[in-house]
Length: 330
Image (cartoon, rainbow, N blue to C red; front, side):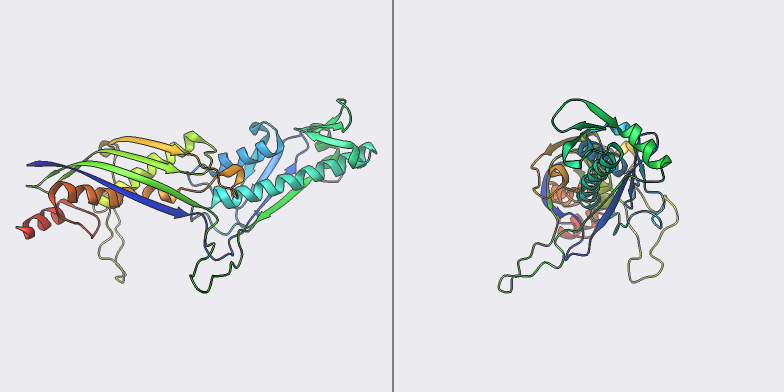
């Protein structure tokens, strides 16, 4: 018999590693043609970091994003980054980019002041152009400054870094500590149909809300949620490394034994992004990459319990486990 169930979960997820010691660096340099190089150590393996970090730089410098080329291909000669993990890149590396942008603006004005023989205090930078601070006359721009600095043996470069809450003290009586750069939140509701004769679970709908600070790139965020949802479904229903630790033979070498969800397994998904800008985040952003796969497993097992009255606490919740739990209850 097919039985319907609904489960709900609520999760929170920190940005970055805890306890301090989680820095990032960034560098912005002006090229001879007036375009910009953005150098970071954070890696983009599909989460959209290259796009978002370029967005931060473009917004901070008030230039088109097309003018910015990001470089992060070799961590041994890029600026330092702790890691591309812990949902930290948007927040930590993003703040480093903003810091580099501020330093770059100062470098532009310093070079322009020397080149034009005008005191720096009498210049202002708007986008890629330099003006007299008390007028609208354009004096020079990035193309001219880039050619003059590079071909003249100089350079215009900005360096930045960010480290959140290094060595935060612990409140001795309560144990309270500012242990994360930011905290993101999510809720998830899953509707399932369970066949109590076979243990098969059909996930019909996943409804979710994610509080992500300020959403810098809605399309990338929606893609992160969709992909994370399928990873969460796989974690809950099919993906298994057996035998598990401490066995040294816990890996599998094919996708017949390690079963991942496919396009045929995608349920109806309704996802909402909630924006509550974080005071410390770059333009209010938080990191939430890992969180996108966290709420589905508990919501799914709660939905299974709602449908057939058995609690699965050993993932994945395979048909065999569900049917065994149903049989043992009789």
